[in-house]
Length: 348
Ligand code: NAP
Ligand code: G4F
Image (cartoon, rainbow, N blue to C red; front, side, top):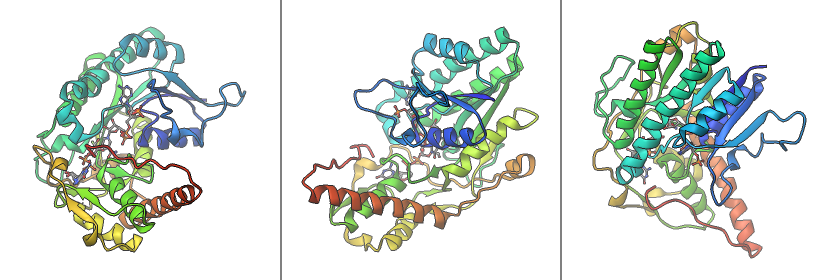
């Protein structure tokens, strides 16, 4: 049985990846941040009592800000594969919390790479490392973006991801380690965080449809993104680590849509006339925007045999259906006299 270590296991991708690796027979370890409320909702369906003999998902307190703890966990767990998905991953928030974003996204990656390098040396094993790079690194570079497109990052988040990307390449070359960067374009799902635009839209449409909300405040509707489904993209992460050589790969669908087009499609599925409910709020604009991302994943198709299986239409439909169901549940709870919190941060 192989063992995987995941930073960011409580996030969208972490939960899909953990599920995928369990299906492949892995023992899965992940770090969770200590918070005052539970942050493991996305893992509830695969998490079992740690006292159970057949438990294969193991959660450990840890943080990318804490090098000693990362080193201790890696040495103790002795993973075959390390997936570094942990991040302050919100682009808009990174303008407000630039230093923190750099510490977790860039220096946090360096901390984990150093622990990984020393573990690889001392164990004499050949473990593999996946780094969650991002299409945000391309920023203002014109589409279609490939592995050879120059980076032109447009946010503290993107600059930090570029630093992490190059740390990963340097550790691969300097220490002869198996480290792969996956340059993933936007990927969404019904488990997407509620402050990213797709989920913010589908969540609000569900609530509007059920009469629980009237307005949806958004920023720039004209930017274009290449949106895939997270379940397809975590498969690509794993495939990169099974390849004979450590390399970097763009993972994308090759199709792009504007935020407005996403809104049109999602609202049609939800049966909502969005023009009556959507209002512009400048607080959701970014000081420097990324206008147009559309990836070319020919390399991944050719070398890994990877291709997306879930279409844009299927993605939007799944997100709308998930959030209509959630809104129905909220309405039932309200009718029974329970309180329901309206989530979504000020920076969403
Ligand atoms: P996400 O849902 O925001 O999840 C981020 C994860 O990182 C969460 O588990 C979060 O924990 C954890 N985290 C945050 N700060 C941490 C810290 N200081 N130490 C340890 N863990 C920390 O992000 P995602 O969409 O799954 O994305 C996964 C990774 O891929 C991220 O690195 C992201 O930047 C990158 N990426 C995402 C996309 C995309 O479109 N989804 C595209 C390209 C790259 P909490 O649950 O406690 O907050
Ligand atoms: O959904 P978003 O916040 O995602 P963004 O900025 O593209 O970043 C995501 O994808 C990256 C990969 O390229 C990841 F690396 C990153 O971690 C994250 O997962 O915004 C998408 C677009 C932007 O152009 C934004 O300006 O939607 C626009 N937008 C318009 N109104 C909005 C809103 N975005 C958010 N979050 N909230 C709004 O109200």
